[in-house]
Image (cartoon, rainbow, N blue to C red):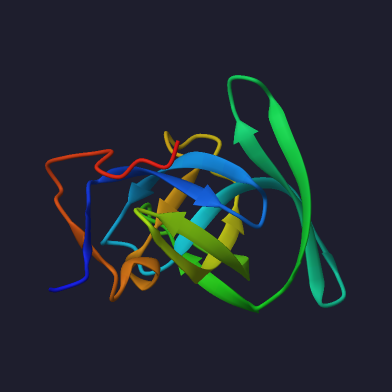
Length: 137
């Protein structure tokens, strides 16, 4: 357990690849992580999409990244969806690491990003009764 950062069920994170900060829901029930995006379009080995930086300000960032792989994700409602997976840097609680992130529309979800088990592995311990234990802002 030495060297692990304790986090809550919701944390502020940075995505250095985009120069943005956002709140993410920590979800140990999910294997993969996902980011709220729209207008996903494949262009050969790359995917372009729009990142919703802030829902309140209608702030949107255009992005284009290499496709790491394509996967099928089964959501909590039992529906399966094919998603593009990209690799991106994440910074949370002083830990920066490259994680796999699936691209999907999360407009009906409370949090624009979900961090699953794979992104949390080896670096974090979760206290599910607390939130915002780390601060990067």
